Length: 219
Image (cartoon, rainbow, N blue to C red; front, side, top):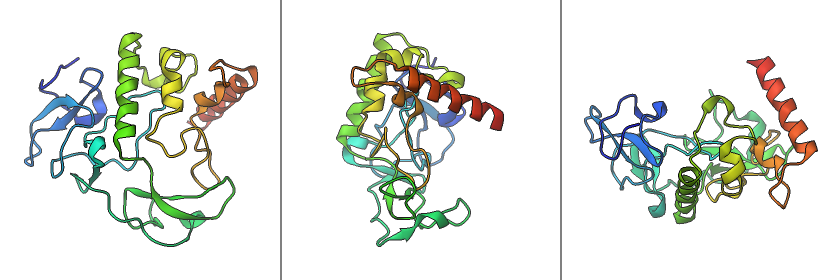
């Protein structure tokens, strides 16, 4: 794994950098890339457009400084744009024809089955979110967890066994363990496997297995 300031390729998706680092362009020429600390780039610096990110079995590869409230919009770290006003019909929200005209905003509704909602950012861009990521990185490193993409949603991974409480109660997602989209399951599936004592329950494990089987069939 590439260390701090080491050269990397493939940008954010190939996870070449050590835990807690992200592969990012050095400057506006968007040619050379190095490993930098996650969520550390200042206003006006280059970034990779990310609609939303989560902490569901992974450490988000986010570049902009969250402690300063920065969002990656049009490949540049900047302050969030104003929310699109008013009530919108979230059932009409599609990838090809989004209800919210700003790409980093999504149609959110208060409960499952709702049809009307409002445009909102998919994440909280603040110091609390930044601290959630830092705590998660520290926990994963402390417990020497290996992040395996193919099984990242499993409640039995090292990630969720040791760091699940951080992921499931993170401050980056407005509702990390509740429904955040109209008519959809906005919950981290592994988080439902935790009781108040942070232990797994038979019912939640069964639910997770069923979800995994359905996903496997669809794929």
